[in-house]
Length: 550
Image 1 (tube, helix red, strand yellow):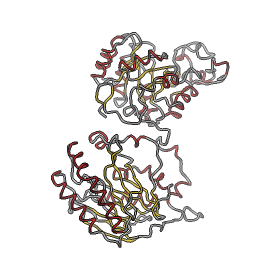
Image 2 (cartoon, helix red, strand yellow):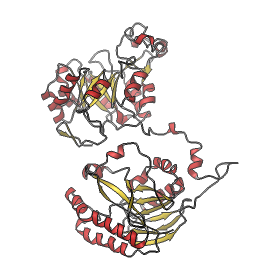
Image 3 (tube, one colour):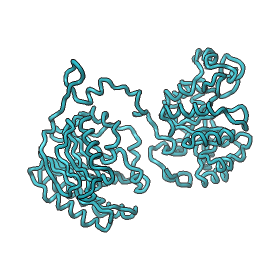
Image 4 (cartoon, helix red, strand yellow):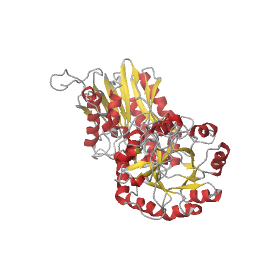
């Protein structure tokens, strides 16, 4: 297979767009029928920097259809497989897309960039909903060659390489627009990718300047990690020949047969050592859409409150958020129980703080439900995080004995440390009616969100949140109005309400502009209010009348 990679000029001057675009067309005209594979860079239809949104749209209008037509014509004329990257209009937005053309000039596949940059999502307002959903690495098979894809920023997410490797690619197509990283770093990433997937990496980028040591990096790398071709920052097009089915196998440990690097790694993989990942991961709190429901103490109508079956039922039914309560035990452990007294939910007596964790674990917290949950034990915060980190947003109610005194800061630090240990920072927020505790949390963990609860001043939660710099409030029924919600939104503050199980009441709250409703009847309300709840994966830029700035 003879490969041709093309590296155009790039300019930060949008007025150069037409000149740079014509260069790309002329480069394709220089391709010939000796070439089996032709690869162009990312953003061929935005050939110069579009600093403004209107310039970006104008580039799309002028060049997208033209470059796709040229790609089809070139693939057919040269009888070559061709890949280029341009915008794709989904009808609800534009996507960063790599197009695959077969030798007849037909589009036979699309790859949507899996890690759009914040600039693409928020400044260029591109459609990125798909990137927050589970997906399998894209494979386009043409004439027995399996092509997988990475687009520019995708090269940085090494954790995805093993997932791509299991799709057994022959060639990784890397349409890139690298403009800031060093050439040696770009080569390092490409070699690492090839070695980890046992595939050729064919990467096409843009030249920042022929003398520059950043950007560029159009290259071809073999499965053993050797660089076969590297243009650096040279403008132009170069070719090399490969056997796409040639693989690299190495000794896989003493006495074992040779294997591909990813097979060798896979044999000893310990996925529980990594960051949470996979199909069950939901959007973090700052990206998840509103309005939403919060399963109050889990699905406590089907299982005992603040228990694994209650939380598990809520998460399994798709609850975007759960709420639970934390107390400190006599020996400093962190447990989940609503009341300070034990008798309502267990066979114990007295206060939580008068018992050690071992003493509490000896009690039966399966009270009620006709004995179906007999023997259920009290949960620690760590047990909740072990099972549900990043699977739902967690409204964590930090309980205190009154609404004025501070809490033991070592206790709060342990809570914060567990959230960090389980990689859950973007999926939690602290709720308290104690402003002293909220101030402590703001000082100890300024990166974690806080929510002002009713406390002793239920009618002033918004004013207190503004003064404390909190991101959310939790109204108590009977102590809020539409005006209070609007005041909160005007100050960039999200609004919860505690609580509602009544469909009509909850509907009225949502119409008023409430962001989150705590409920004991998650499934009932979720079905009945589906017309008002936002269950999409789309990132909101505006919700409830005010702009969300990521």
